Image (cartoon, rainbow, N blue to C red; front, top):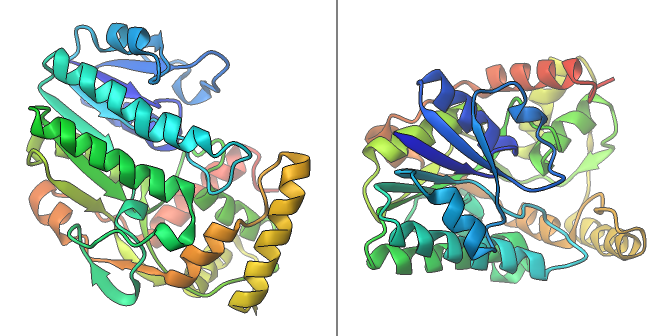
Length: 328
């Protein structure tokens, strides 16, 4: 069996590749020229150059594979070029899945996000059936991933053996960028976060996500989506956990929503000039206020999704960030 993993050099993709190798799977990965491939260095994998927006490179990358794990995405909550969210996350996914259907793959696991399910508030433990409500946030990542799922389901109805997984806030090892979730841990540990907006979140270990993706390929029902999450927390208690494990004081200042929203607008104005991501985007502030608690029991019962204690996950993440120079 040969599998293809898109986005394999990224956070979730790299952890998936490591789990597949543990299982003795024959792995092919896609990278793009200029990509940071440190997560793949010294691994026994076949590397191919592929841009999922390019039909010919997609066709070549899929040839000879029977399983596809699609983890590649344009992941950010702000960008100077918003078209990239839709070019990569929607159109790229459509091109990739149309070719996977044409080549007759046996299973396709699409890694989407809980953002495509929406943020339904504190204590509303919604599941995979919840209706997307992220339009008002203006978050192009969330909207593009929701639209990508619509395209994916259309192709599934044509015969693509598709399973969708929707991870919540993912943290853990091998987060080289780091992602927005990893940046929270790094900033708190480095005492670079003066304040925060209280809200509701669900958190999961990236290695549990990776193992869950493999289980989804084996056990997932065609056309179904599975929320990959673990502990439902409040932002303040999550940050307290991080600070305790890092041995620092947690951020204490709770920033009022209207102030945070104003700061988000100001930061984005500065980002248009600097071309660097804002400290916090307007859409992040809006999503934070909406809050998200989830019921992830379907993935646990049907796929055996592992539930590593979040305290353990934070300990592993901080150790990795320290060893790799992210935390002083």
